[in-house]
Amino acid sequence: MEKKKEFKEVKKDDGWFRNVWRRLREVEGDELESKNIIATIGHENFQTKGDNEGYFEFNIGTKKALESGYKTIDLNIENNPNIHKTTATIIGSEPLVGIISDFDDTMIVSDVTNKIKLGLNTMFKNYKQRTVVLSMLERFNKILAQNPKGSPSTLFVLSGSPQQLFIPVKSFLDYYHFPKRVLILKKAHGENKDPLTDQFAYKTQKIERLIKLYPNMKWVMFGDSGEKDLEVYKAMKAKYPRKVLRYYIRDVDSGKIKEYNQI
Image (cartoon, rainbow, N blue to C red):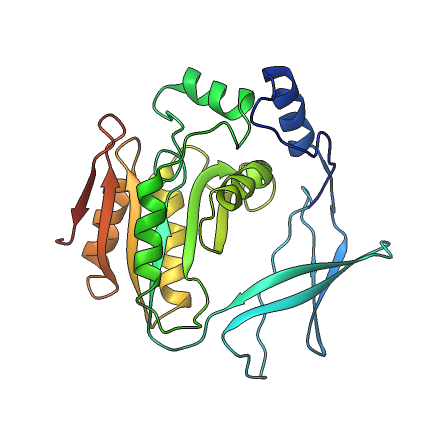
């Protein structure tokens, strides 16, 4: 989805009005509704179509062997002369340790259980003014370092935030130097929307898809006590005991992080 850019430069001393205006411009997009999008990987082309909100997804199957790592992909959009470039993470069949982490109140302090504070944090503060959970950055780096040198990052950030907040979420993670990651956000409405209020159903669906997509991956999961992370991860550990190594839950009140490695 193409986004209009206003107030591109973000400053730590920006006022609330500037932050709100920027957020409104970020969630407003030049939609790619029903437009054809062609992805070029090497010399192969793959085509998909934007949905009714301008979001799109590629399910790519190729007979050519792709090396693990990062690969540049050219995106051609119907009736748009510009070629847009993005980066794909290629994860091979080798056994690796992967991370699935919640975002709000796990990596960033959001006060999700207090809807007024959540709204103030989301709308009135920019990513440079938000509070990071620094211990998570250290934990992620330590876990990813267990994989062979040169392996692509296997961090998947699974958030209940809507796709319209992609820019501020990505900007926050980049600003605080979190490892490269795949960012999974909720499709809140439109075609093929995710469960809106059922966090358990939403997260279990996404996690099971990752487990099946990467059968040789062992998983470590991170979440918080604010919503359904504990129940979700406990269920995943019970269903996939050999796939889920352990999970961690951050207490939203004390900030303490507890490890769980039993069903």
